[in-house]
Length: 175
Ligand code: PNS
Image (cartoon, helix red, strand yellow):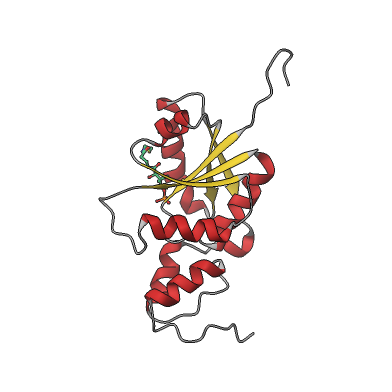
């Protein structure tokens, strides 16, 4: 650390829709917690987009999945991500990187965020190989037709999916 610089906690924002939280998100959050003092999972309030779970349900599922970890906060935000990051005194925006197909969109978003707020850094974390093909949308797609996705989402999310989609009958992994 530079001489004279006051030590302060390094806060990172992990923004997204989290509709719902997946094990891929959990993996990214755990990696971010190893780097930053505090990680804020920030759910975008986006009235223009149709979601399966309400903001309140998503907040609750994430809170339950990380119960007891004081370095992890969960919140919702409106408007520009960089304004929210400024308000929270965050030094970084975390995004998970899966396959190369994520790159172009993420690159564009990071450049826009840098243009809007040059003091916040975009940090890309690679998900574990197991989760490369896991996404909220594919999980919802499979679950609505009754697929068992219990090994792809945290337990509190699996329970909510079962509640939403009664077609999911087999709650145990046969392997
Ligand atoms: O989980 P998602 O849907 O990929 O997350 C996208 C999100 C919420 C990170 C992005 O849409 C966002 O930051 N929206 C807030 C509006 C904003 O700041 N837009 C300018 C950056 S391109």
